[in-house]
View (cartoon, chains in turn red, yellow):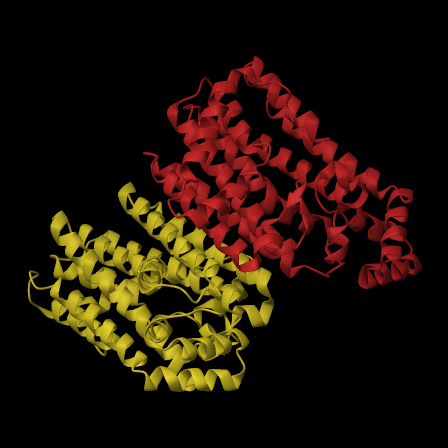
Length: 316
Length: 316
């Protein structure tokens, strides 16, 4: 993540405080559960994007902090529910909510986070903000549902894969950027620039996340790897591979994707590298990052602009 | 449910249309899933309460329909997530979402419903409505979490049980009544009357629902019974029983509650009846219904008033 971000440092701290305050609960049992979630707090990418988009468009207003906290809470709720989905045992180098308390608790905890997010959201005067955030949350759900329904489906085309990740990952990131701009009273075309930056950034981010799941080292990523393979979820490298391989290779690969032994996983990983499919996915991610950075071309230079460009670089 | 409700007939139809419209999706796979949810649409108790509360307080305004639809969607989302929680195979005489598509889909579908509910909610001009609905949704989650965390805990006191059901069931019902009044521009004391009517109604409703789980016939209820026993969830009849029984009886009953064979369930049911614990619970429910009806004493007579009184009767 970014090493330093002076231009939004104070505000990021305020976002954290807002977040912490909204997660207080006078019921001790639930308070403990909520404390536990905090250890899984991510790198606050979405709040950072809200604030940086605001800064690059002219300056931060009180709503920025609230929007940032709300979006992070929505994101965190999806992580908690992903726990139910993914059954991953290791997430961010800590026990998951699921493994500690069961599926049902993870579902309800995620629901609690979402309702608190919308509660905080309703404190904003501008109903348009709430509407966009709810629409983005809806898009995330659609993406996740599509992904679930396309499980074990290996004829998945690249366009459909991109559609899925646009919804499940990029929509919320794009919303962060758009609202950051809108809350700074930016003109609509500028808001759209930031939104597009966010969309491209989000797509690149997810492509790379999927690459890491296939190639990464578990300790580095802080989460269980090879889960996509285990869940019958094909991603960009695999889609590319199945597009370029011979019919006989395809038959073999489909056997691995179906059978999913550790040996099959090894073979799959090997051929993904050898065929250039991993490289292909990295190139596509780079392409989206370049597109993201281009969206910032017309925006004022300064620390916020620099950091938005840097964030894009860090993804790849 | 109510046989006829002329004074809100048109508006109830509008609520259904609003609900249907908000559940449209241009993604065919998801559209199918959403269609499926519709078969589980409940008796629309919460919309009925929004509209009746509005009518009894002076008349319906455009926001009433939206508030009603939003609250029904929130309720439906909790039913879908309850599926994940309860793993009941039969719900409302149809297959559950869970048994058809798996836990993960049920989680995401519930999330989709919630985000659409808040999306619709943000179309209301009055941010106060959103805030209350989100607060009520939060209270529901707190109640459900408490219930989960108190599983297999048989020292549960009546006060704690009432606290749990106040949150998980009564809060949303109370919110329906309160907002129905508020959207009709009722004075705050009147809104509070309706809120209290809703709270008492909701508590009575849940007490009776828990009684039915212990005593009812499966085909009548439309859902699997005896689930509370299976899940180590003690309810009012059981709490009463453990309070009045002898120490030796208690040891035996705790063995049944722990072991949970069909035989244990039979014995448990038998002693609940014989000890008068079922009757006790029914009496408590009746008490709350009387309190609910008393809250309506100062409100204008008319069809809406009559129907609100009738609804309370129907619970017991």
